[in-house]
Length: 117
Image (cartoon, rainbow, N blue to C red):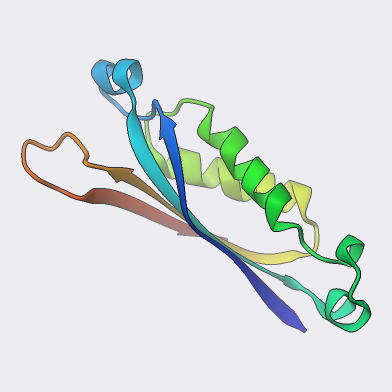
């Protein structure tokens, strides 16, 4: 049985970006994660030890947000790799990283990158 854990609208202040000012001043970011995993045991037994912990998933994502990158693609890929390393029962991970109010010379709510593996 496949289950889906979704963490939506996680907000972070981080220093990702190609420009020196972005890495100095920082920006607000939003991350959405979807982790598909085999949840048959957790659904049957009702034991937290058999489930994929969304608290731990959040902590993995937050740790990757603290490592500065030039590209959102790199941030998202690191999150995917770290989630697979932490959760061997994962069968598909989808991450969307959005930079809120990116410095593009006009009013833009966000720019986003979505990766799935």
